[in-house]
Length: 538
Image (cartoon, rainbow, N blue to C red; front, side, top):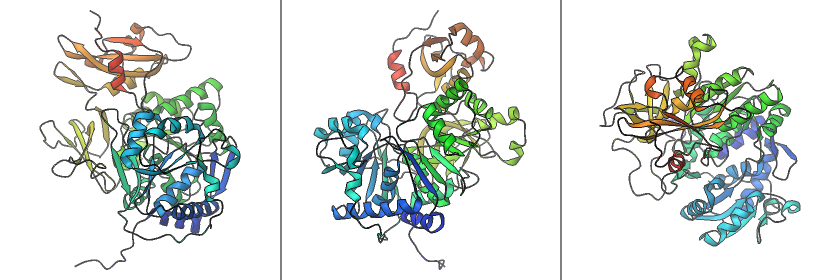
């Protein structure tokens, strides 16, 4: 016997319609690439979204066509999310930090028909154009007054939509139709394409807004520092509209001072970004003595949340929460929301729970598997390869014939994790970054987080290097904090109070800069190149 409910498709344009009906006066604020602050309402945005949909349709864009965009977090790129997907086309958000070769690869691989970009990226686009095989036209995300030097033969976004109607009859189609696509950062091999469906992103938005996830609602103000090219800014353009949250887009200025200005003037209550962003802001606060009277919570993802950041922001009354996910997961898989019995504990007692990645969102199944394929218990002790499945998790990479999933239908994340009986998951390392020493596994993440507790350490990365007896031992690579000059011995002594003996690094090396990937993660591959052939002392 089947249920007798209406079979209505889950489409992102229905999020927009819902927001216009219920939250039309809610603001969307942007620090523009041109400089000034731009401010309008959800109702205003819907009119421009309709104009863009008409302009794309008039240009011949049809269902399934790919539209590329290289841009900062701004209201114009926000409009593209709804207009492109709303007509059945696919918005391909391109990471400018991929560099010309990888960026050209993903544009050609996706077969983008048109390319939109902020004027900042005109030099990159100029370098790309001779390599692009499918792009038929270029558009700068600006107006006629600010297009100077933004690319020969490119049209401006505002002129492109200017004469179009601000009313659009949004079509209905299968909810499994593609709406956006992103590529993995390609740290090993070519980047891989992940194509998101309307259904997946609508369901992800519902789950992300829950009290057991981001817990955002009407009256909140959210500033997404995480870039729109990083898995749709963690789905913020959809989640915020679903529940009427005011959005504040930072544009190109992501330094501590610029972010603080927006947090303060726009009374931001919630923000989201990778650890390096949170670290830079914290350093600015300590340097200037400024406070955060409005910010209540922050979501930190992309890599493990260091204890030093949790402690640092607690001093300002901000609860920094760890989240975990992947490009392949649309992206949020877990958020660390503490249950009442844990929240009631003292700060020191609840800190070990805050250091975990959190509990899975509804409909996300997680399991850990041993090297020989055995499913391990969720007992808080066994660690194994983390595998996931769910309605917003990748089924197949774009244009890749080889199976993406395991034989029984799970996606292997490449992470090593522990899951406790209450459902809290903790990433212990990436499987390729675990240090194998004397038959034991040592987490590079644990050593990095402990090192960041030292006031003289600004950044820390750990790799395993060859040892004739133990196979591998940890090498700690450090960027010193501004004005600090710790010695290797001082840091090693400090870590002996924080780590088990097996995890004590055998050596500490100082560098001016630690290489970061396109999404702010430490590039262990580059660190290994930098220290190739390194010989441990003694």
